[in-house]
Image (cartoon, rainbow, N blue to C red; front, side, top):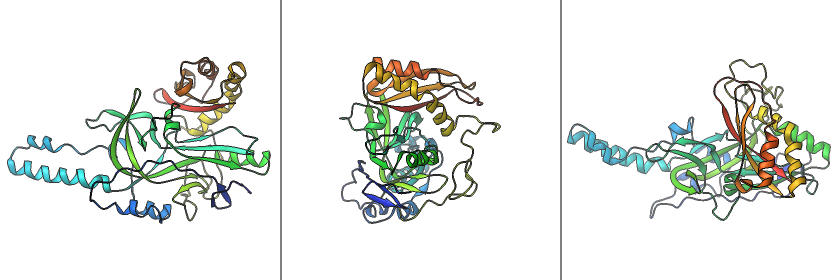
Length: 352
């Protein structure tokens, strides 16, 4: 394919990769977990092998109950046994590495084509659940779930404050770049290996829980090709033969819309991306009107009929004429009908 970038080279793809992850402070005089000790020399696959899969985030990250709640047990013996078990869980669980593929649309952002680099900017953020709070606070309070703590010096959107890497993906010519985008933009996924340290953070009105990053990679869920990896990956991802929307390992998506699938209870990433492509010109026109450059994050609420209920600009463009212009332009978006309740998501547009 001939993608030239300098830096990490994997499967014929070279990527400039600047990792900005936050490491969790280790407890005093305690040895680092095996996964953390191996981070500098191990491959991503080796770290992943040490990590347990995490299904539902809200269930898997629920903090153990406090030792004080053991006072509710009926006898002193049961109270003592309860305290021993809960102290063990509180100490041991944060030392067990887990792995999770993020489905949050804010985890990965691809820019429009940039003629200066003959390709695209690929940004990776530590977002496991930046779009929707989950009941993972100390008392079950709703919190955003992130890998790393937001950088207070960054005044933009939450994904920008949680930046883990910024990469430039370059090509020989525009047709090659467009072909790469067609084959990858809807199927890129971020997989995280982390320790569930539950470090709380607050950023304005946003409240979250930070997990400690051990490793991360970005790959194509249909082909298994790895584009970003820290530590480096040694082979492509093993793709299941029955991956929905894919023909199988080594092939690309054949049905990107999912239209006609019965019982769909939410929009797919590809359906959202297709709808956003159709309004990109109208949103980009806001730059010609106000000449404010940057990334505007638009928060959508879509009804099951496919009609947009509301759009608001977030981050640096919130409350600005450019942000209001982009939000108004985006209200013309239309999605395929789906079942269930309204669906909300955040989608980035680059104005230049």
